[in-house]
Image (cartoon, rainbow, N blue to C red; front, side, top):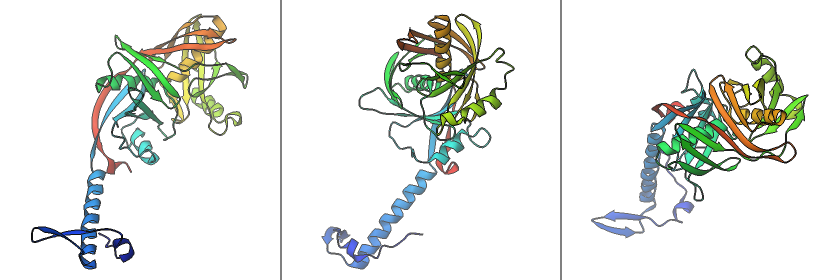
Length: 314
């Protein structure tokens, strides 16, 4: 139903033109003005309806099993406030299914901007997501082998070579003690606990408890359980906030775990095993000086592409 505007005060503020006998004339009647507005509103209504049924192209990427729905949003058309739509898209039974949604946007000072949402619509920095975003930006032709881009925690550098994406993480000033374990902020907060056998450890149950511990209120923390495999090798499993479950891999999580391992063994090139594949973290510094030049290195792969209608995900 098209609503007719009948507020003469508003109408008189506007200058309306009507084509009569092939020429433009001003000063049309109030009734004609109402008709003109009705046509305009009908046009807007139709455009909105078309937008709701518009097909949106997406690409599915994964970085060691951490998977994301990717959308080229260089026109900044995506409604960032529609959290329900993000959750619906990431739903693994009724949506496309993913650990998060990533938008690639244009930025005046960087090659591109990464806008990342967890599956529940919350925002944070995601290391594997950023690596996948770099691979996606290369696919779109935005970058070649090296890039500087912006994320929620600030600017980052990255490079692509031989199917691997190397992402420079932010500096880490310290490793703190928390609840008898370690705590590290690597763009996102991470609780890190050593365990003897990570494969059989109750990651979901313990991760959920620690994620909601009052000391991390109100935002909570990601939780990582790590097993030493060697002086420079660890096995990491992560319970991620925002996903509210264990993921196959977490980039910021393995980075936090690698720093904790390096602080213990004095190694600065750590190999990480996850349920979704292998990653590598290199860095400089120590617990006294802080950690700098931190690089997260691993594969990022496009799995498939498709389209969806906005009206199907409110």
